Image (cartoon, rainbow, N blue to C red; front, side, top):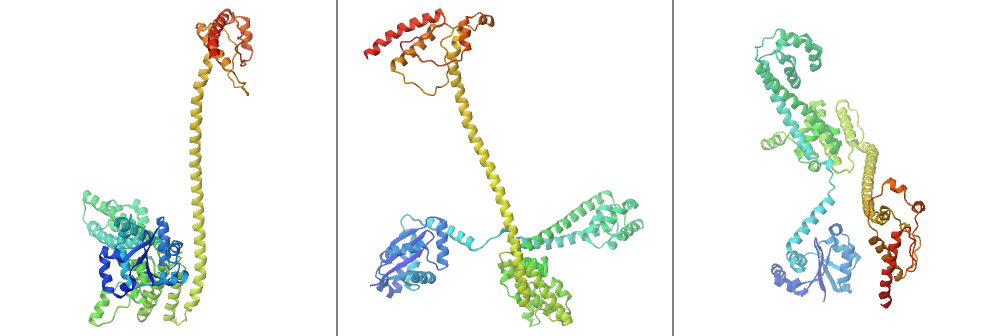
Length: 596
C-alpha cells in the first residue's frame, strides 16, 4: 500500500502530514471536500508527522526564495530524509508547487503528486494549520505570514529612493498648474496697472518681466533718467528701456493713488516670487528626470518625458505600453470620438510637443510620430529595467530620429539599428563602469569617515573608563595615607620620639609568632594611653630640644621589628615609664596565653 504524505510550506516552518485511507479518499472527492471544512473529520483523515520551524525571519526568507525558484533547501532536505520512510517506492509525496515537486523527485527520489486530492488536502491544512501545530495561534500565524510577505517583496523588488517616479509626477503636475496660475495673475496685473500706464503692455510681452517693471516703476511720473540703468537691467534691452522712459512722459493713463500703488506692487511681488519658484521647480524636475529616466529625457526632453510618465501613472506602466499606445497617449478623447464617428484616428498625443514633429513636413508628421513613439517605448524600457541608468541610449536614439527626419527630407539613408545599438552598448558599459567607480569611491570615503568617528567614540569611552578607576584609587589612597600619618605625628606633637618607624612595605616579610604579635600590639596601646597630648611646640621650643632627638630625626626612618623579649630604646623619662607599665601588662597577659 502506498503511503501518501503532504508537504505544506508555511511562514513559520515546514509541516509534513500523513493521510489515512488513501484509496478511499482518492475515489470519493465530494466527501473530501466536506471533510475539509469540519475540523473533527479532518483530524480523522490527516495527522501531523513532523513540523520543522524556521529559526529566524532570515531563514524563512531564504526557504521562501528557494521554494519559489524550485530549489530544495537544506532544511527541507533534512526534514524529508528524516521523517519519510526509507523505502522510497512506497511513498507518495503531495506538494502544492510542481516546480518544487520536480526538484524533490530529481534530488531525493520521492514520487511527487500535485492537484486533485492534494489541492483539497492543502486547502484543509491551510484552514486548520494553527490547530494542527501545538503552541501556534491564528494571530501569530497571520503575523508571520505578513512579515514574510513584506520581506519577500522587498527582496524581489530592488527599491531605490533616488529612482522614485512619484516626485516627477507631482512636480510636472505642479509645474503645469503654476504656468496656468502665473498667466492668470499676470493678466490681472496687466489690467490693473494698465489703468495707470497702458503703453507698457505693448512694449513688454513677457509676464514675469512686466510684473518686475510694474513693481519697480510704481508711479510713472517719478520715472526719470536716473532709473534708466535699472530699467536696462530688468528688460535686458537698452532700446526697450528708452522706449519705456519716453512713453512714461507722454502716457495717456490716469493718475493713481498711493494706496492703490502699494496693492499693485505687493501683488506684482507675489507673481514675481511665483515665477522664480517655477524656475527652481523646473531645475528640480530636470535633475530628477536625469536620475530616473535619463534616456527618455535625452530623447524627447524632460518636460515631455515627465508628462508621459505622469499620464501613464509610473515609469513601469509606460514601459509596459506598446509603441502604438505611446503614440496616442494624451489623445484618448480624439481616439474614441474617431472610433465612434468612424473618422480618422489621431496621429499623435503628448509627443506632439517634441521638436521633431514640429520640424517635419505635414505629410511626414504621422510617420515621424510613429517612429518617435517606437524609440520612446525602447527608451522607457531601458530606463525602467537597467540597474545603472545612463543617457547613452537616449542620445543614440535621438541621433536615429534625426537621421530618419533627414531621410524624409533629403533621402539620405540612415544607419542600421544594429550598428547603432552596438556602439551604444560599448559606450554604456564604459559609462556604467565610470558610475560604479564613482559610487565605490563615495562608499569608501563614507566608510573611512565612519571608522574615524567610531575610533574617536571608542577613545573617548576608554578615557572615561580609565579615568574613573584612577579617581577611585586616589580617593581610596588618601584616607589610608592620613590614617598612617596619624601615629607618626603624635610623638612629634608631644615633643617625644619613639623608635623611628617608616610605613614603606619591605620586600620580604619574616613570619611572626602569636606572642610577638600580642606584645607589639600591647606596646602600641600602652604608648598611646600613657603619653599625654600636648599642643604643638613653638619654633623656639624645637630648637631647645635634646640633641638626641635632632639626631634621630636626621636619620632616615626604618621599620624595626621587636620580639617579646626586646623593648624599644626610649629617649626620655616618660618613655621609660610607659615601657615599664607596658612590660607589666605584658607579663600579666602572657600568663593566660601560656595557660591556654
